[in-house]
Image (cartoon, rainbow, N blue to C red; front, side, top):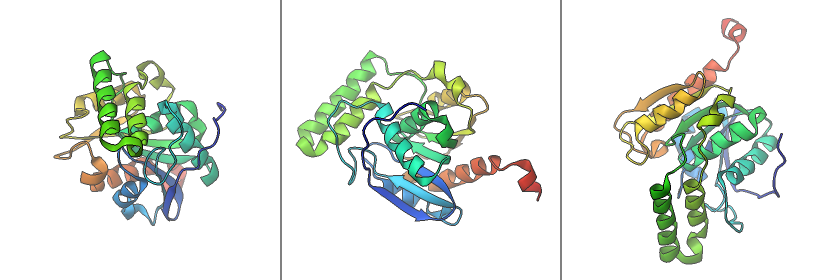
Length: 236
């Protein structure tokens, strides 16, 4: 396993009982939003929903950051919970979850990803991310630094296409059918690069699948975790 950078103590929201389900929120959100979205799974899973670095009550270490920094933070949480875990991620959380599966595959038993494509951003879109980070700093000052650093990390995320053959855990990509930030076709492409990954859409749901498509997100988790159960246990 790759070594981890110095520890960052994230604020973590926990509820439920059972196998760990790690839920990673999008830019500008908090762990509590993922906890609410997945609350119907409380009898099946321990829902572990951190505030990612720079968000909520978690710290904002000095930047710049990369997506691997987010995944390393989450790796520490899963190690403490007892690996492996099913990981659900939306947007920024999906990027962190995918980086986690690539860098620490033994910590991940399955992935549900939403609001993410497989490619790096081209120059024009990188400029948009940079402009968005600048706008956050101008509007919120030091209070927005964590969000701004997270935006910059998303803008500079790698092109994962050549690495996705290394993902061997079960994967489901759940796209909001009305997602304009990351169109469903881009998310379908992500699923096509991962061997055996499943792709589905949540009709009339936008980019915020956790907020607008909680029912579909819960169904995706149940379907994926059922696929992780050995056949002999299902027949028992």
